[in-house]
Image (tube, rainbow, N blue to C red; front, side):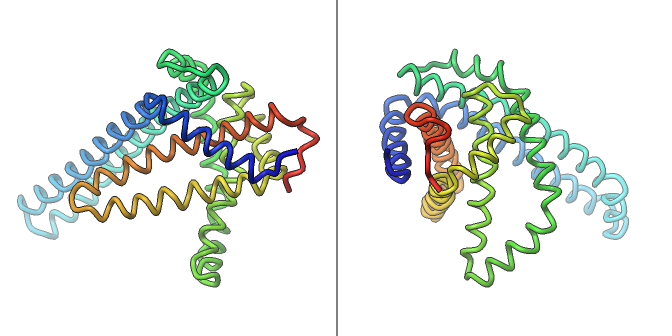
Length: 266
């Protein structure tokens, strides 16, 4: 039986080689990034124009009153609609990309037809799953907000990293399970928790790499004047796709090489 660390490293190496051979797997996520940046920038510009126009057109006090009474509800509603639209688009992209990656790993080749097939089959379930996970995190928000910063202070920042990795272990695999096993949303999330318990350490290593490497490289890129503002999100997006590739490869490897009862990873 392979050591779990070797399985993780083999997955990282194989996905790096496969990614270099098929760069089209990154395109949908980059397109989504461009659309998301456009909407965010458009909202910021709209807020700035509205605020400046209000201040210039009347007295400062009157402008502030107008912004509060009229502008903020409108902007809040617009922000909610845009956030919902971006979440739906994100769910579509993730469903398509994961479907594409699954086909690529199983058949040795994949094209945009596989992307649209995965999108069509799983986007709604993916969207519902993201909403459920968001609601779950909302329920856990109070202990997370209280305990994680305290742990971060006591451990000089390492507690924050541990909290992120812990959430990753139990909440990162359900989209893969939904795609690979064609499970329902509730079943995939529940199975994701079981997978997190059974394969805690290999998933923790993947989560740690996924957290540290993009942050480090994005920090290096963003230091480049002007170009860094564009380069950092691009680097983060590319690495996000790569580590999803690693996660789905790891999950498939556990299904292919071991029985579900015979793996001893903890």
